[in-house]
Image 1 (tube, rainbow, N blue to C red):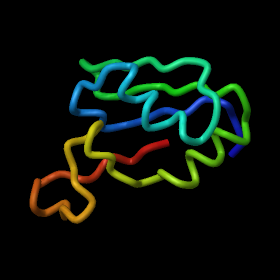
Image 2 (image 1 turned 180 degrees about the horizontal axis):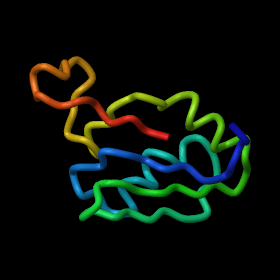
Image 3 (image 1 turned 60 degrees about the horizontal axis):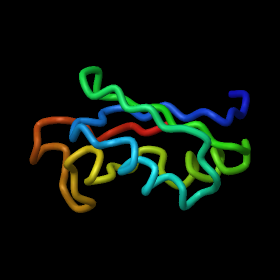
Image 4 (image 1 turned 90 degrees about the vertical axis):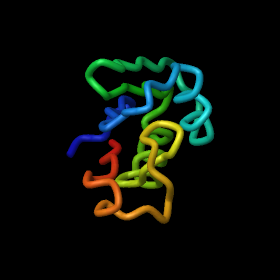
Length: 88
């Protein structure tokens, strides 16, 4: 996989605002833009630097973020009948 400044986020089911997504992902570096597609349940986060995108992806890959997915950290997939959000 070729590193990129752009991250695709899947299973974004809570219809967050761009600002809510930014709040989560700006902790990894300067974010150039965020775009949420609530009807399609995904979003894009575009970082200013590749290193920031790599850091976010390695930290959050496969992690369900409650504000974006509705999943809590301790909740199992069986409890909801779905799979947690496969971010990045």
